Amino acid sequence: MSEQEQTYDEGRARNLEALLRALAERIRELDRQGRLLEDAGELMRLIGDVRSELFHYEVRITYDTPEIAEHRRIVRDAQETDQSTWQASEWTPPPPPPPDEDENKEP
Image (tube, rainbow, N blue to C red):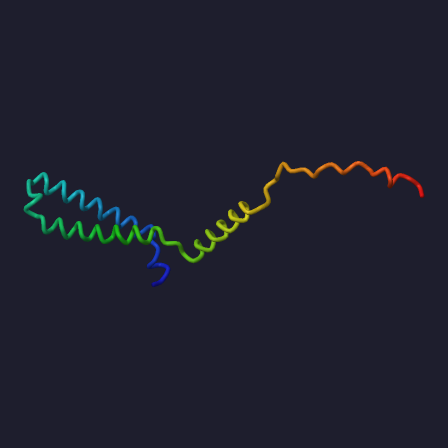
């Protein structure tokens, strides 16, 4: 599958919006005519078309191209590095012991 098939471009998104509007308009029209249930077969076909396109939209809108996936990996790695750096602590070394008197005597 090519990258074009895996992503959902603006033109296809506009087409999906048009399908949804056409379905809504057809439902309103049939409702005004009192024929909502009489034309159930037509509505099922229209709903099926919209449902199929909505599925493709949902799947493809969440697809990461290889380039985007690499960018996400770089950001994730940077965040993990940030979290694994040394944290400052409150520990301080103990004071040195007092000088030994024997060390100060001359031989």
